[in-house]
Length: 209
View 1 (cartoon, rainbow, N blue to C red):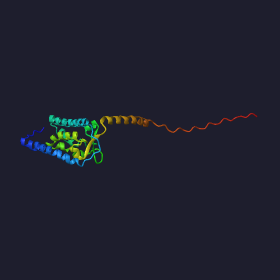
View 2: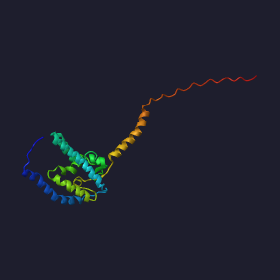
View 3: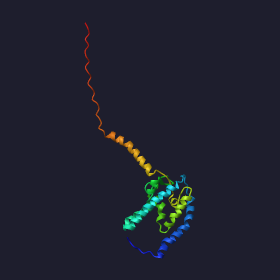
View 4: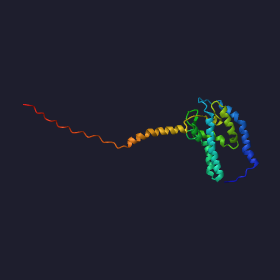
């Protein structure tokens, strides 16, 4: 693991000042971007959303802890990539998939992709600003009628209800239950067409003279 000394000036310049500037500009930016943002989707349950965020945060912290303990840089890189790209696969992070949530694009109604996920979560990679963003974004999620934080406004997205892991497992089990009998019947050897039976000769009748 690399030991890089961090001075007070560096800490102030790269963490404290960006945090203060971001904190002062946050709500004016949210208000400005909210003017052109319209959504017909309902706000999801906050407990599910914050629990999903907790699952994702625990994955990131696991990567950081593993890097700290082992010094293996891939753990830190993986955690850093997961933060902005966590919603890139069908609009679902690990936490959202487990809790039945999905990030959609408001214009098309389709799940978020890699670029949308990057725009939505890039704030959490900015030094200093990311520390303030955690609290401010959480507050905005609670206060906003649709639960749209600044990242959602920048990416034109919203978190809505989707299928959860349990529902996906039930759907897979139902598909397997239907597929198995069909596969079993298809694997059975088919009998060839029955051969036509030869006509039996008719017995001749004797008439009395």
